[in-house]
Image (cartoon, rainbow, N blue to C red; front, side):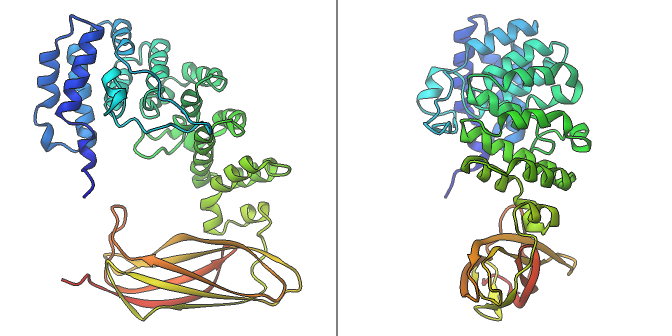
Length: 387
């Protein structure tokens, strides 16, 4: 069984952090820090553990913020290595060799939280500290209060960082300024008007690091939730003549809009026209149990004398607690159907509950969507999980 997520911060993490902080600042009250940071730790979930650790840092680091940042920076492990594609060699679990050399991994979420709490009156020094932290873990959550409360000071720094030699820092420019970053403070001003960050994304979309480019794609996908036309225009502007890396970025950026059948985005990808032909969907059975799976069989038949570029997705209309249906679109296939060709597509869909979606028994519907248009459907009865 996988280890509980909350255990990414545990008493051993706290003890190691105390060791590195005392190494950097011999006057550090390590005993008080560890006592406060571990109080009732086992009863707390992950985020609460990180906040408890940040409370302990506030209580024991120097009162002078600049001095506290000096201590934190001196306690850090070396920056995370990157592979040939600019991807982190590991995700900095905070264990192993890096952890023995200094602060690294998930404990740095708490360190970033300390900087965010204490640094708003000292933005330049705080951002310099986050610049160091993000090279050992990430500062995407910690930088958001600065973008929220002090955008006039913070955005110019991000514009400088697009040319930083560290891919970790360049990724922070995009990831930290995402309007709707999961788990992060929502940047309401950028949700309403994302134009301040568009020059940053333009500068980073052809970055050498796949780590950075993936963040740019996710940032654009965030924007698409509130400004779909903007992202459709972005694809239309930046796709012509794009090299494969940019093409992949743009496709990932527009994935939600393609699933939704957003017509301008589909047109930007040459997918504006629906299927010329027939679609038949069949399921492996009329019933399935929670915890099992159901097989989809999709039969496509072209009636066109020319090839057709198709994106074939499917939506499962889940039964909610109140009996209504809620569709969830799942990625299917991307293909070119030759003139008058018939093709069979198969997919096994898992019916295991996940943390983000509870499955309720009842009559479910699955529909097949070709270039955003629903073309065929089939129903099945979802039964309770066997005892």
